[in-house]
Image (cartoon, rainbow, N blue to C red; front, side, top):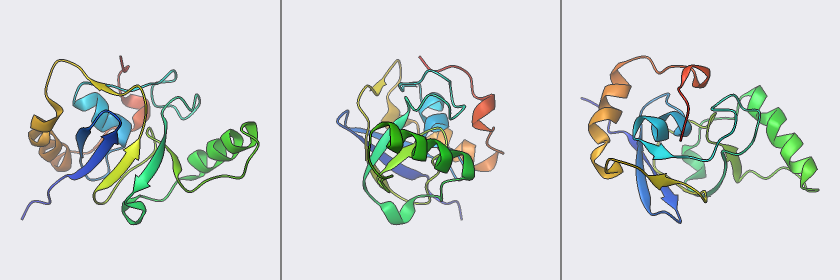
Length: 137
């Protein structure tokens, strides 16, 4: 039995993004031809991909040490404590449906709702490290 890809609802764009097992939200966005704000292209350096989790916290993969460090720096620059709602798309994996807020995300040439087939394919192959992902638009 094949597991259905998790769905990340991206607001305010209203996009449902299928995310394969072990795939980051950023990698899924690239795979489905979304424009996602970035400067470092998945290196966890620029924080341009930072998003706010609105719903589905129980379905978030745990932040790795790199993401934790970057989020601490981001919180300190903003003059506040780290928030469990802020995550980096280039590091975030999900195990179930999640709703996030990220401004600047938009669909390009293909309909993201029809990208479930490519998410199924992502489940069956090893997902590349975000450092190996090509540039976002």
